[in-house]
Amino acid sequence: MMNKVPPANLFRNAVVSAAVIWVLALPVIVSASILNNSHEAQKAASAVNLDTAEGQESFYGKLKNESRNICGSSSVNVAGSLERAADNEKCFNETLDVAVQRADNPAVTELHQNSL
Image 1 (tube, rainbow, N blue to C red):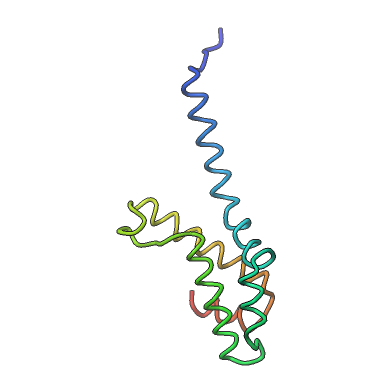
Image 2: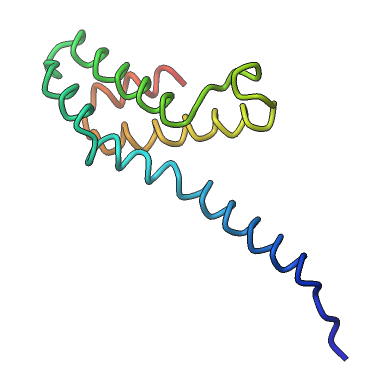
């Protein structure tokens, strides 16, 4: 005889599963937005000269700022809880990693690797 799972548990399991999928997919979605769909990112890239160190640092800073704006603060006071702050920091790191990878600029990649 099979044990029946209470409907409340099924609902909770579905919500948790959806949340896990969302958290795993978020950095890819966000980085795509930053580099492919974001008018601001396109303006930022075109407004700097990626052939200069200053331009590379400026562009990398804009990627970091946009990633932080989308993912939220890693400050416990701002995020509201330690768990939320940790989630925001993980989102930021993963989003920035993907954004730098998609930028496909060796100098920006080096800046990113040196900041780790």
